[in-house]
Structures are given as C-alpha cells and as structure tokens.
Image (cartoon, rainbow, N blue to C red; front, side, top):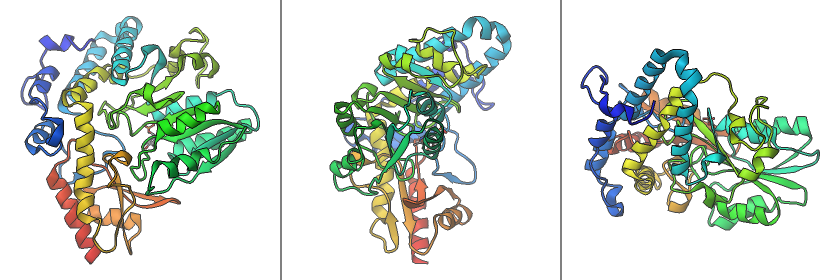
Length: 420
Ligand SMILES: Cc1ncc(COP(=O)(O)O)c(C=O)c1O
C-alpha cells in the first residue's frame, strides 16, 4: 500500500479520535529555527505528544529500539490489517512494489543510489552479509575496534575460524583529546595484509562518534575496504552515506528513525555487489543486483512499508534540528552532574563533534549493574548497565519521547545516589 492511500482513509488510534497518519503529522507545528531551536520546549512537547510513553517508569534506554510516534504506529497497524485482508494476493503480486517504494524513499533519505541499498531486518544481518560474504583469503587482516558491537565482533571471530583471517583490535580512547588519537588507533594497525577496517560509527557503549571519513580516507589510499556499522548514527547524526567514503554501511531503522522493529539496510558500493556472497543462497537475481541480499524468505512487509512514513516524521523535524535536540538532551543532564564528586561521564560529552544523545555514567562504589538496578527500583528510571572490558557504567539514551523533566529526575537520582 502506498502512503497516499491513507490520505482519504481514517481509522481509530488507541480507541480515540479517527485521524489519518498524515493528519497526525500535520498537528506538528513548523519547527523552530536551528539556532536555539533545540531548547524550544513548547515545540518539543508537541513532538513528544505524538508518542505514547510507558506508564510507571521513565524510559532512558531508547538505544535498544525507539518506539514509534503515533503517526507511524497507526500506519503500521493499518498496513498489517490491509495485508491481512489482501492475503497472498498482496504477497504474490504487490509486495515487490511496496519494497521498491521503501527502497526509493530510503535512498532519498540517505542521499544515495537506490540500487545500492538492500532492505534487511537489522544491522546484525547487514554486517554479517559483509563479514561472512567477503571473499577472504587466509591471512587477510582486519582492523576492528575494541568497543565494536558484540554481534560484529563475534561474526569476525567466526570468520577468523572459518576463513583464517587475522583480527587486530584498535584501542579507542574513551575520551579522546583530538581526532588523531582515534584515527591512529586504527591506522597504526594497518599493514600490507590489511583487507578491511570495521568502524562503529557511533559506539553504543559510550555514545562516542568515530571520525569515520578521516579513517576511511587513510584506508582508501591503502586499498583497504571500509565497513561501517552505523546502527546508532542513521537518523541521529546528519550525514550522507556517500560522504563517509565507505564501501559498506549497515544500520537499523528501528533505532533512531523510529521505524517498527525488524528493519534495517545494507548499503554497498555498486561495483562491489558481484563480489560479495549473500548469507542466504540466491541465484535468481543477476550477480550485480543488490536484491540478491534480500533473500530471507517470507517477511513482514508492513515493516518496510512504514519506512516512508518514518522518514516523513523525521523530515517534519529535520535532521539538523533533531541531531541538535538529541545532543542538547544529553548535555543537559551530563553538564549538571559531571562535576559532582564520585560521578564519571565515560563519554566525550562536551565535544559536539564526538557525541549525540547517548552518554555513559558511572558512580564510584557501584557496579554498572547495581547502579542500573537502583535507578529502576528506587527512581523508576530504566537504563542499561554496560559491563565491558573497556567501559563500566550505565548507558543513558534519551530520545524525542523524553522530556526535560525526565532528565531532571535522572539528575536528582544520580546526585542522591552519589552522595548516599
Ligand atoms: C553499534 C551497534 N551495532 C549493531 C547493533 C545491532 O542492531 P540490531 O540488533 O538492530 O541488529 C547495535 C544494537 O544495539 C549496536 O548498538
């Protein structure tokens, strides 16, 4: 079903008003100017009112997945209903059109060629296609980060067992003083045998943003492939895929784009498509067709149908303003507790080029698990404990559904815990 099909239709939302997703979006006022707009609480309260917040607790763990605004949720429910009514006629005759509509919309959003995007279920699937499908030779070296996401690290370890590749880990500083410290952590490990560098664009553990394009520029000069895990960067930071200078970029759309669960993509430079093996066997598509990576069997198309709707919501705010707001929320609470005795912020939070919404906090005398438990049990604030060799602390991830009052509650909780 196309987005425009909803214009004339209307349906019940949460048993209340009959209103179409487009009308819901129209209730959002024009965004404020970029300068100072990140703190216009009147506007952000309007945005927040499109989200149904959880009862009984404050969710500051939007990094796992981000719930949908009511416009997308309503669209999703209607799509599911529609497919359920159209039955296999939809699946046999119409689903490919729906997929192509989503692909075109996403390509516009990412400023890239639609023929370079495979629509997948998540970042894990996207990066596994690259890691398992790359034509490795025994002894090839890969440089990855010591704080890369577990699923990618595991996939590389399995590829090492299977293909005989050699893994080298860049030690990324938690709070770098400059880009060079991070760039050299990776490029210092490059040798003549390095075939690929794997970069986590925005590190989930700490919220640190990596200078991807600068590292990629060095890699390109040495003919090294650049694979980027942008799970947390897409629809969070403002960037065009082509500016990253990467060869492969994977991301999930159920995180910062607020699309329904189970949606992601893999972007790949066109000339590389024939060289990569799909995870699931596919010989029906031409070797040079990006769709050969989408062969995953029967899947929920309604999730993909929502992509244009999720982009419409995002664009109604604008990438630049959204990024500013997300960083503003992070800096709002970090700036209030950073100097408090016993509190450490494990994120380069003061440097706007190195962070977005996510930050990681630790309190002396508490493990990350203990801190997360107290925050939830006593203060009803949901977060996630990060216990990792490189970082111990609680990850705090606000999103557009949070309020400044939520962050004030966090500041009060952290201050009380640290002084108790
Ligand atoms: C940096 C990073 N990469 C990849 C993933 C995996 O995302 P998904 O579970 O959607 O595949 C995550 C999930 O949190 C992540 O933080």
